[in-house]
Length: 308
Image 1 (cartoon, rainbow, N blue to C red):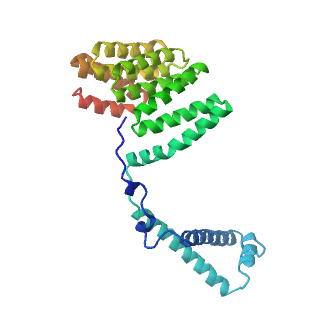
Image 2: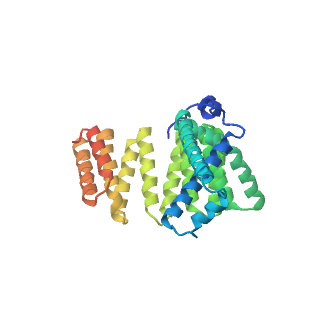
Image 3: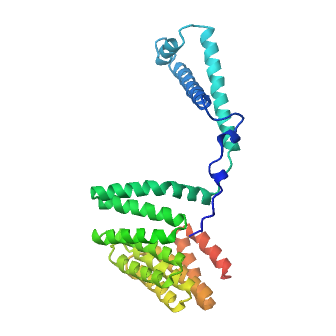
């Protein structure tokens, strides 16, 4: 996960007065919106009149009700409204163009700070009402908010509470998600032993979920963690277990990915280029045969590892 950058307060909440030729305060936003909707109404009246040119059509009736002064007053009013709508659209475009573009990381951090009090409020409400599902949802949102703000010490007990609720309600999917959050948080805190225990428990939980794709994800991420930590024997065993699982437990669509992961590991982690590249080529051929869009990314990875 990408480490979020520290926000720049000025760019997160830019002054509206600095992004246009006049301040977006008072009656100006209201006037612009009124002109915009009025222009849309005029266009609808014109279209209705053209498509149904009967004297008693709806467009004519509305026009007579809204503009009872007749010509040329009606034409002048219509023209002014259309011009006003055009100005409103142009001014909106100008405002968007002049608004500073805020990096995604800053927007994400700002949203996390705004989400925290909302999540805490929803959590308190769910606990008062005795609603475990709503409580787990609020805990997930609160943990994510704290994690994004890099408050890992605060996020960990939140995820632990969500895991406990998942165990109490016997919801394996909530446990699976909470264990992943705890593993990532432990990595950020530098407690790799704890992170490994959470990855191990996640694999155990995934085995009890009927859909095997959950187990594929658990093995894949545990293997990547083990490789990054330098435990190459564990990483290889997990990559191989994942490949065997896709072949033996009805996940043929995942086999190319498992092949590519194991092949990439053998090349980069073990230095076994011949065997690893052969596996990656086999995976690319399977993707090509099935029309899988992942083939292009796989071949990029092969070029990176000099397998092509």
